[in-house]
Amino acid sequence: MGNRLSQADAEAKAEAEAEAEAERRCRSEATRKAEVDCKLPHNYEAIIKDSDSPVDVSSKAKLYEQLHNGVFLNGRRKKYWVDERGNNCFMLFANDLLITWADTNRYWRWVDLQTSDGLMSVAELISVCWLEVHGRFNTANLSPNVRYEVAYLIMLDEIAFGWEVPINLRIKFCDGSRQECRENLKEKPRKQWIQIPVGEVEECMGEIEFSLFEYESGRWKCGLIIKGVIIHPKM
Image (cartoon, rainbow, N blue to C red):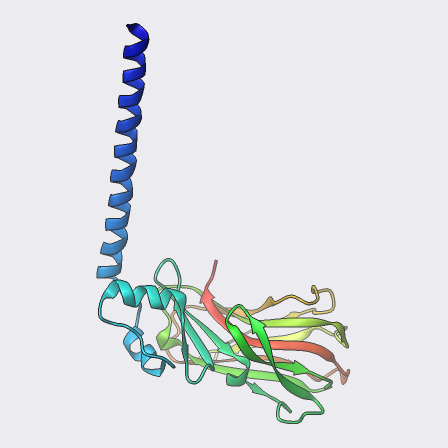
């Protein structure tokens, strides 16, 4: 008799715990939906006007799902997505950057490479002594009150050479101020995508300019592949 009662108690307890867990999941889902309903990404309407494909805005949940997965902009020159906190993130691909000598095939070549964003056109450095890559971005599309990091997304080939001298990285802000740093690529891992941070952006309304360059040494360099520049919340 006692064993039957103990078993019944255990089953009742397990059932109660299962119901409580189901209720917690329902509350969590309801909370998530409520958050989607009441908070949409900053300036998203203006941003998705440049989307390469239609964005379903029939419901906030569908819209949020698409933006979480990401949409391409301006003929696959940019990508826009929102992170798990609803903050705007951007990728400026290599064809949206100004690369000195990029249109001269003895120095650079454009190749289609399979990446996490699908088949993308990337810039592969054949050989230059004057390395210079610039980009611009309007910070009005960044989420307010969030500290962002700007970083070049690059890969070094196994045959990469000429990187004994550190590269220069710089951000110019709309008020004329700037951040500058240097990065040594010689010891970076080969054959994998890595982020090279340029600097941080917070509460800057206007256009920023960012640069990666090295030409003072006169050294010839090769084996650098540029996917683009990523702008996302600082972790």
